[in-house]
Image (cartoon, protein in one colour):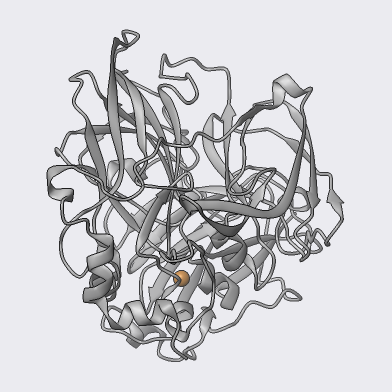
Length: 488
Ligand SMILES: [Cu+2]
């Protein structure tokens, strides 16, 4: 079967012509170019810790005058940013008006399995789900998205995703004016039909094997938008909300920025970087200095983690493509310093782990990057440890209050591995200690070859509402690269 997307894979040169703006080298953006949309902020504290969301279909114009049918939370696409405070108990009410079943998973939020919104927590069409979310973790940028079995990829692709900001009352003096110097950026890729503006989700075989990839990058639902920022330090809360693509972000002028937080919260100190890879479902908070007043384009490179496939599907060259543009307001910004120190993550002791387990992720292919000699006895299916996800099977039992070492092995291609209901620390990545920006608490990590994670179990999950672990390439997840664990 040939779909638009499988066609893109087969004709990489054509795809690269659409993604790479011929004039991008001079920092100009010809497509899109409107203002960066800022999602509505719903601060739970201003709503008596009771928040309602409605999941429904709507229309969104990626191209002006050409509405696409999309999904959104309390709006036509994406969802409001939810702000929670540590120690609060937030009564959520989620009404499903989609016409098909959905769930809402609070990705990175440490809540028990029955409130986590995994595939078992189906919200039938017309029904309302009312979980209480007890906020019990340090400040972090999290997100929410659907997780229905076999339909997650499609529902996210059509627009269901929103950010969550957890605050813990610790003031580090960081930029915190939402939408001014503290910007939420949900970065995604889509195939958008330029004639009628529509997006579709017709899976071809390659889409299932490699994940759905688009030739157009969108930020908060807009193509190459422009943000106006003050002339000083600005905090960007980055989420890769793509189904499959890894972004390799840099500023066109090569400026250094500082990574201050990863999935689970702050790093011990700001980490200076000039190129940052962000994989599906990962979050990073970065501080960027715009004091020089110069406009600059944020760019992404081809998906290098994908090797040959990334080169042919995303760009076909080594060139970077525009993501969005920043323009600097002439008015002076609030004087701020880059902090020397942030929050030291709790020390972890791998020798205290009570178990060691191995998870081999396979996308059904055997490539040169694999270590098939070690895993040659596993069948070539899209699954984990040779098994396709089965909702009736509890794959792992863990003990509340313990830690385990999980060794993740990627076969066929790199997989972004995510654990629900727990945070982990990366002990090793491809046989080496992780780079500094990956040393804090995380809930998803791109595993190119092999990773060892120290996973800390702090929330309960019964066999009825277990936690999931899975590849966050959503087509892999939907195809069965997912397992579930109870924690008691
Ligand atoms: Cu995968």
